Image 1 (cartoon, rainbow, N blue to C red):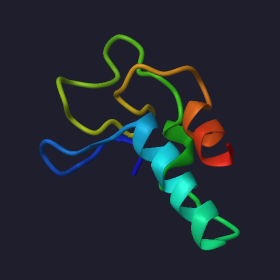
Image 2: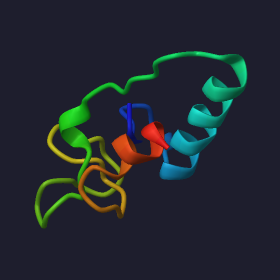
Image 3: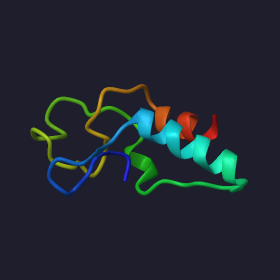
Length: 73
């Protein structure tokens, strides 16, 4: 799951997404996807509480659609 995960202390970052893309390219994997694509945006005030996984946003600083772009290259 992109951004802050529902397992304490785990955050999937934009750098992680770029590494997954690079791995997929090296291995000839044609397609990667992400859980909760609708979370591919920053949280607004009140949407996320201190490190908890939000349902509508990633919980990390990012531009809208940044994880999708990182996976696409």
